[in-house]
Image (cartoon, rainbow, N blue to C red; front, side, top):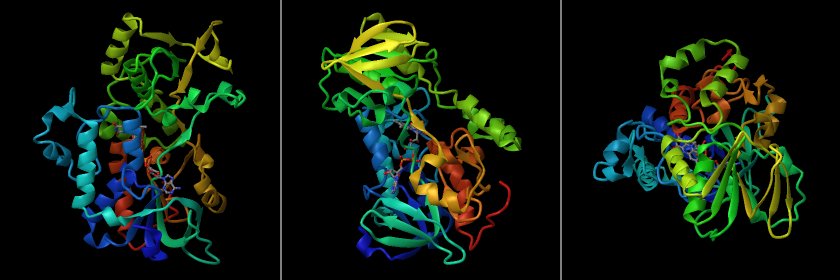
Length: 409
Ligand SMILES: Cc1cc2nc3c(=O)[nH]c(=O)nc-3n(C[C@H](O)[C@H](O)[C@H](O)COP(=O)(O)OP(=O)(O)OC[C@H]3O[C@@H](n4cnc5c(N)ncnc54)[C@H](O)[C@@H]3O)c2cc1C
């Protein structure tokens, strides 16, 4: 839907149309049918799941890392039921949904819950929080100049500020941009990499996907990580999805300690056993070299290729550098949240805001989903499972006429 048809005064604005927003939309409608028409979703693409779909096709990811129970529909068995005649698209060891299957299922969710027209094609450029002396509503300034007011806002924007190593910031921009990019800018389909030497930096699954794509394109890959590569099925142990670990996490009163527990649980990036097995095989075939416990100190563009210096004293040449170095998770670097922070300052622990237990900001009815809600939701906050856990807290609050905003979380 475009913004012309949208009322200027709405009840709930959801910023972002990814899996977290979709999970919220279905759970709101599941809890109360009358929520239909009370919330609108803003995403520049005007479609659901656009960034998710783009990322999966850009990296040619064949299947999800998370099992089939994690998805945006309130029925945990929904995806398995949908896959009844598509069992080859559920991958071992725990029925990991194939990319196309998951995409089709999410489209089916959108249709079944009649959410096609609930999404507005617009980027929110500025979020003005309520100023009690003047008004009690948020003002959302859209890219086309239109201003929408909303009583409540949910931020489901994902986490997309690329984390770049210090040495990258020292390089003068005199190189072709495609020769040094963050993983979020790489689009494997259509790239001609035959014969190239590619340096991939990072120890998470994204570096694995990039390596698989580069080797399929007949490039020679160097995979560099500052730690030893670490093999794990999931981002975080499944004990983090239930009371096994969450009980202790929620009992922890120190926010700093919770932050450390989150770091420990995720333990930086990791590769799945399947990808590691593949990478070891191609390394034996001479197509890939591991550089573990190694960091770049400087890189120079030499007109045709990169000269890269590392902290182990070596210097090598590469045709491309891909940075699978992740994204920064810091509430203070999100421009949309700057005014909220200014008018409603909240404690921040290592970049994460301390929210109320219903994931609302202290003092105004802004709710956060995704990685920024990790102090309250736990280490899987950014994942599909975290979206459902966030809904357990946000939905009861959004379906109430008012929420208490000043309770300690
Ligand atoms: C390659 C990859 C694979 C992953 N695989 C899995 C997996 O298998 N299982 C799992 O559980 N997790 C996985 N994750 C982690 C996580 O589930 C995804 O990152 C997921 O996309 C997060 O959903 P989201 O809705 O928070 O963010 P996104 O999917 O990024 O959606 C956010 C949306 O907000 C929009 N937006 C941002 N700013 C604005 C604005 N100012 N105005 C309007 N709209 C805005 C964006 O356009 C975007 O469409 C993966 C992550 C990546 C990067």
